[in-house]
Image (cartoon, rainbow, N blue to C red; front, side):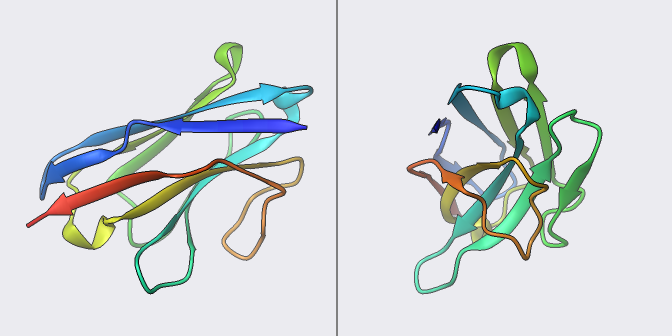
Length: 122
């Protein structure tokens, strides 16, 4: 089993920055891909970003490319999402996810965190 706990959400003004963290626990985490998804009120959950188990492959949704940066710290089993130049449309609950297989926009990872709220005011 894998447990994921997100932190770092909050309220920020447009143009500001936030860094989300996801602490993972469980066995064989080193071979798990990890990623971030988000869900805004009244909308379906959408892919934001993913990172391979080695950290060598990164992917981003077009809507966040150039503004968000995903990274992972293997020794601490932690994945981060640095969010810069935030926009009101980035407001959503952000979920951390993990899976032994690559995470893409069309996949549904097997493990999820509880989510953390990000609110961007205009």
